[in-house]
Length: 360
Ligand code: DOR
Ligand code: ZN
Ligand code: ZN
Image 1 (cartoon, rainbow, N blue to C red):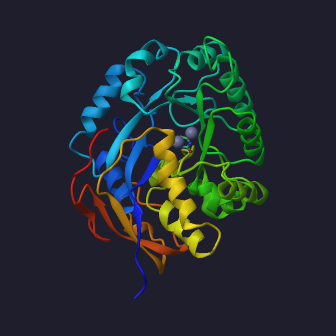
Image 2 (cartoon, protein in one colour):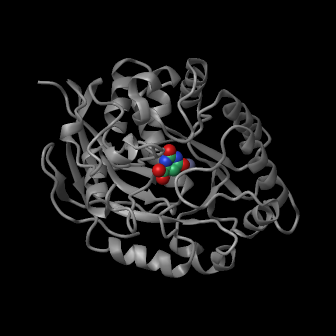
């Protein structure tokens, strides 16, 4: 009999559950079932839907759609655009962060006009997180904008809470380390696929290994792992970004991979291999996301895992609607056995019960 470990309900601050507008890929029911099966009891959903979450109507209709249909708790991020700045004061209280797309990716939210970016950085309320999708050089720009427009009154650096999504490059880690050393309020997350896959896997995976930012070199990956251990990286997120098999196999494959059900098994495998401590795993997937995004407490909520079970990740056993994973066939050690949300059993290792989730 191997020993069972109890973890707090994990928090994923970066998921794309695709509702409304792209429910062929995922919806609130299947996406939050996948979250629960993966040990996540709280998720924050991104705004890059076909009809983007960039005005109060889109936000409230998204919230209404989620109401009564989610298996874990769910909160939302607002999208930055030229037209959405006017709504910042009105919506800030109802969301957990603002997402600013500074590189081209899925959706229609790329921001390239410097003047609009300056407006976005100076207008988003300072007590709320401003998240950037900023790859490589673009991150330099994001950091400098945060310094220049972080505080309307004094232009003092670091007053804005900048959060860097899915770091993937050595250069990005260097920039974030330097900014942290200067005392900037900056945090960052790494997506699990950048920790467990690299550019050499793309040949084998084809479009199932394609996402933004892309998989990078072994050297970059080693730097990411060091940053996970030394605390430069604050959060591990899934960046769960499902697309259908057809969308991945088409002429112009879409970028993104699912990750809600594979993140915890992969991290537990790293714990088993002695690459990561269990304490650090809990900081990266619970304590830090909760603190950085000021998330509410979930009472009597926990996850039981068997850290010693070895098995093969199997795309056929997933709850995500997309039905595939870039980690299919990978041997892992550590399995979610049970999830309890506010005293309710919501997962017994096989079946999901509910929906008992709340819109937060
Ligand atoms: O690969 C990605 N997929 N990167 C993103 O930034 C967006 C995401 C999506 O929504 O598909
Ligand atoms: Zn992104
Ligand atoms: Zn994303």
